[in-house]
Length: 224
Image (cartoon, rainbow, N blue to C red; front, side, top):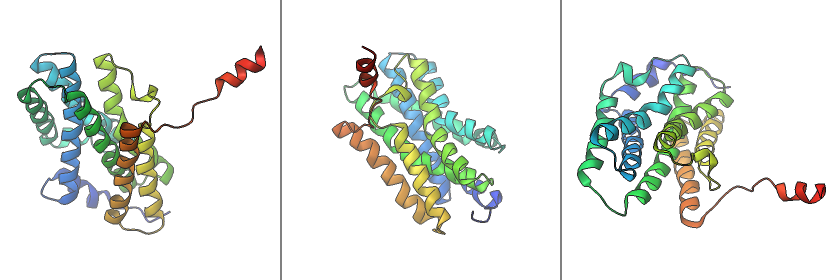
């Protein structure tokens, strides 16, 4: 395993949008917050619900990650994350109705799955988590907010969709962690991993890519 990364190196970068990594982190929160607001828009909720959906989707995955790796919860330490969520929700509200909203939700979610799969794994690595746990934290960071969003909106959870969704986040996190184990620096590893995660989800959206399902029919035939 690589030498542990000092959390004081990574965490400040995640806390200030003036840095490239920090800017990406804020952008990822904004993307997920927008998907939350779009889910509220589908159900024609009011502005307060828009804000709530945006906030819980934007920071939900990162909150669970930070609690599990015993890190300071990022949005409690920096109020700007919640401000970004509220701004994204307000932007969706102001744009108004349109048939594009559901497709926009799916494609924004695809961007977030790839990017946050990597960022979640990177932060777990910075706090000394083993490689396998880094991968799990990447997937949780990318997916948990969306799971909560779907439950609150009364929509089928991303965990129950046949097309590639969670697998895209897992792939991004895994490729990033494996690259780091081979000594590749953070940015090249992220530049490889995040687009692959996005491409897998994009393929699912465009062409219906999915993983093989359990062949339950074989069991039924054998039992009959």
